[in-house]
Image (cartoon, rainbow over all chains, first blue to last red; front, side, top):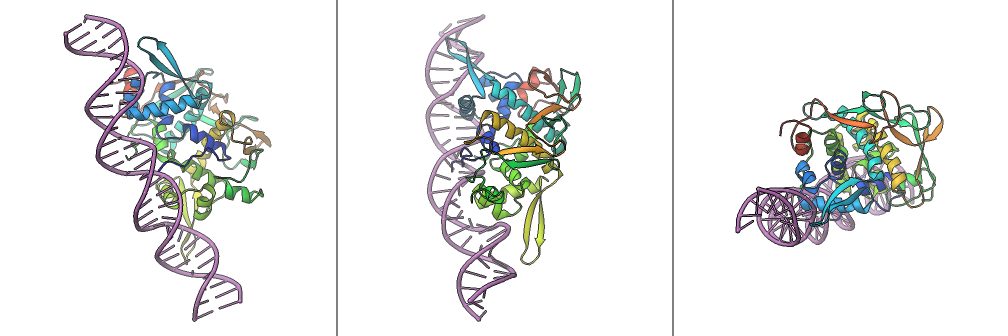
Length: 166
Length: 166
DNA sequence: CCCAGCAAGTTCAATGAAAGGACTAACTCA
DNA sequence: TGAGTTAGTCCTTTCATTGAACTTGCTGGG
């Protein structure tokens, strides 16, 4: 059946997943980021079905994560590039990669090393506090209801627990 | 058709997605982290089909992200808790949430505020360099082939481009 | 004692998304 | 003229997802 959409959820994770949470989508963004801009390159690299790649690229473009850019007129040919939103998503992918390196190491060891050009070091991405710069973890972070908190699909029980409308 | 598995990919993102990339799975982890430990609570909160929740929880337990803990004997009843791997995944979810807050704000504004207990500030998660602590972005990070880099499903073209075996 | 209720699932049919391979369009280059 | 490139579309098969009903084992109230 059609997948349940997360679009109506009062949850930014749900909203994010609606845009980049589908199967293949994060890998497509990874490929574009790593320099694969042509349809056939991405299709061959991932081994994704071509019709599915068409659909995924369409929705990424519709959501403003990827930009479809003509690089010649006749015949019309296009390249795919990340937008600002797409580029800002890449660090999330790096954090995901770091988690995978630690808890789900691929056969043969980590396939990618990351170098931070600004400081020159090979590094591991970490999620940090924007205020003090320290790494965050479940023990040191508290989640509080924000302005958009509400009972709705995806947050019924949570809203009840935090004292919002049942 | 059955989803193509990313398990054989030489890519930590693929490995991560294989474990937590399926539809619903990140939201299930979110719910458990936020204190929903019972099957019925999670099912009601998300509105997920109960058989699907069963399957997702099974695979999360099999992958060592969630732990199934008996809290009474007769009748047998269980609670779900995050393991160490699961807790370390939560910051990735926070980064994903921050991206959604910025680029896909849910109706009504950000539904959750995060407070870093260590410094007391309300903050935005950022992905930073483990060496110098500065936030990373696409412009300041270079990806290099690591020990596990290889041509294979999910990385054929990339491996060719970076000079590995065709 | 009987019935309602809870918790944690399991079973089932209907539907539509994914896979994969063949096909098309429009052009270029030798 | 024929092969190659690029970016898709079309089609069939197969399986995951949905939603709702059903099951099991026990507790607590009247």
